[in-house]
Image (cartoon, rainbow, N blue to C red; front, side):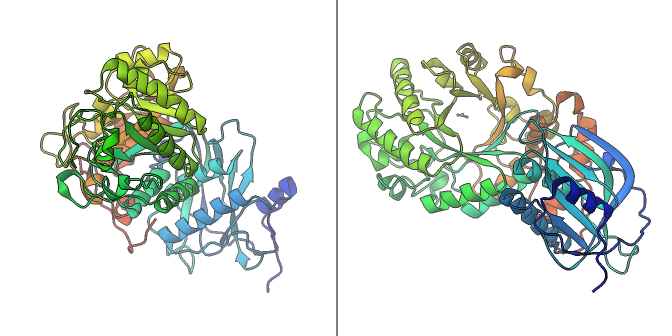
Length: 536
Ligand code: ACM
């Protein structure tokens, strides 16, 4: 064994925090390597960080790099392990985490900082170390996503007898514009498997989206097991649009999605859409039905024909059971009650219903989210209106002191076609090309909704026209990345002309992840040239 020689940066880190899990590692001085010039400010990061200062120097990521997190800090150790896994997926390198032996030349450190925002982070990339500083492990995870994007696609094989991935040096100071940066998947019209949703979560995390809203119930299907009302899934989950086999998540499946999302600092928001969009539940339990017809399984795509009976106690006992069971396996703060397009519910019945459901959700410790129509009820100001269609509804919510989640269909609906010749999707709200999806400002979109009333933005993907993950991806990508940037990067830093170049550079990631995307001619796509089929 060589004489341990601790790099200066590590010595400083140890002296400053004395927190490392144990650094008896055999530290060798890193060989002097002259890297070609790299520019941190020119890296195609999405979302664009708030502040980037390039040093011109580089950090050599190689087989002698190790990752360290503070002692007794399990959340940061988990982020370190996640980062190590992802670096292995992209490069094949297996970086040890908190290793106490082995030869180490350079290190990546995760340390505690004093940022106010739990998602803020500071990243300093020097020739001999990478220092990630954040108040929380969540901030460290977001920094880790930035770091993943900075790793070059190709190793340099000429600098040393082993491959080195040079990372551009400098400093990044970053914090999100909005705390809620969401996406929604409609798993009711067509069902998508746990594996499909996990893949979506992987990509969301890579681009710093932090909420996945699952639209779990609709006329065509009920997709979440409720143990006290088993026919919901046995009957209500048995088909989907077009008459396919449908499907549903057991509570164990759902818990696994929650766990997988939480590992990536993504919150799951469950939605049970009511009192309309409820045909599947009423087929399973006709006692709920309120539209005066005999409910039958429905595999078409019409909306607005179903309602529960809003004046029946059984309906509220049923809702109590559903909210209780789902809330018990949902650690996040929100429960979405839908409330949209209840066209066959009388207005006074609708208001009565929403007024009854809000306290049920609150009883189980959750904050209510509803589509913008819920603003007509007498709501608590902690309830959130999701603006999708009607600016007057959203403005009414603001007047009631509520916060608004922005998903205007004309800008943010991922199921709108790109143009008249693109595949899949609908166009009742608009055609939304990739640039149109990006060029708008959530903070000024609606006259009556100012910045302080906005919780964040969410991009919903309805699934009437998509049955396969590749079809889902065609609609989501690349537009989802634009919404990720709208949620994170301040307006003053956004420009389509510059963004489209960063977007064009995402193709190696799309290829590694086996993501199908719409190759819009408005983006100067780069042909990915990958050495081997590794996965992020
Ligand atoms: C919706 O698109 N019906 C919320």
